[in-house]
Structures are given as C-alpha cells and as structure tokens.
Amino acid sequence: MIADWGNQRTYIVQDIIFDENPVSKTFEFKDEKISVAAYFQQAYGKRISDNKQPLFLIKVADQFHHLPTEFCLIDGVPDSIRKSAGMRDALQATRMNPSEKLAKVQDMCNQILKQKPLKDWDLQIESAPVHLTTNVLSAP
Image (cartoon, rainbow, N blue to C red):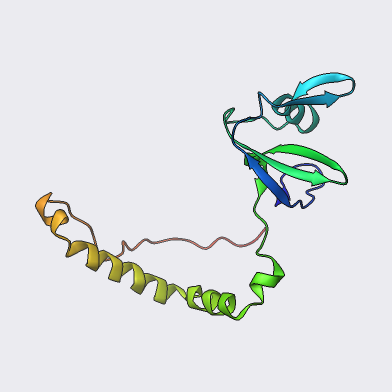
C-alpha cells in the first residue's frame, strides 16, 4: 500500500488489526503515550474520520507500526501475479472502450427489466442512457 501522507512511502501490509482502532491503539512518541489518531493529527495534520476503523499492521526494519486504513492507498498487483497468463487474460477481458461499456450496461439493464420481482413491485429502470450536453475545459 502507499502512504497518503509525508513522503508517500510504500509498505507491505502484514496484517489487518480489527480489534483495535486509531483511538485505542497507543505507542511511545517523544517519551509520552500517544494514540495513532493523535499522532497523525499532530504530525501530519490528518484527522481521522472514522474512529472505529481497523488498522494496517506494517513492518519497518525490525519494528511493527499500526496505520489507519483511511490514509492508505492500495498499490498495484504484485509482479508475480500480474505477469501470469491468467492475470493477462483477466486484464484483457476487463479492458473495454466506452461503447463496449455502454453496451454492457444496457444489456445488464435489459436483463434486470426481465426479472419478475421488478414487475411484481412495479419498479422501473431506464435502459437507455441519459444524454447530457457538456463542455470540455482546456487545461490550465
């Protein structure tokens, strides 16, 4: 994962800690106990929005650290998986141009429209896309 603060280093997540959170987890910092939430607010000006979120456990050198999940960005798929034949096939199957994506969405809507519960509950779905007039802004 990539840190969304400081120097934006990458880390490997060792574990996800569900029984602690950024407020309950404390550690020693400058000879005082401080919570993970207080540390991120003090050190990086980043305020925790969900005090009950789990923590990522990462290892740096020989020390373990707990990071709030909301400040972590998912990094790419490991090379060993990305280079496998199965992954190449899966990625190729998911790459579609906008016209293909629109056709898939319309097919899905048509399948949903045929479902009995939709008719029984008198629900309606528009299968045709809504057309909008937009402007393309130039880059600054």
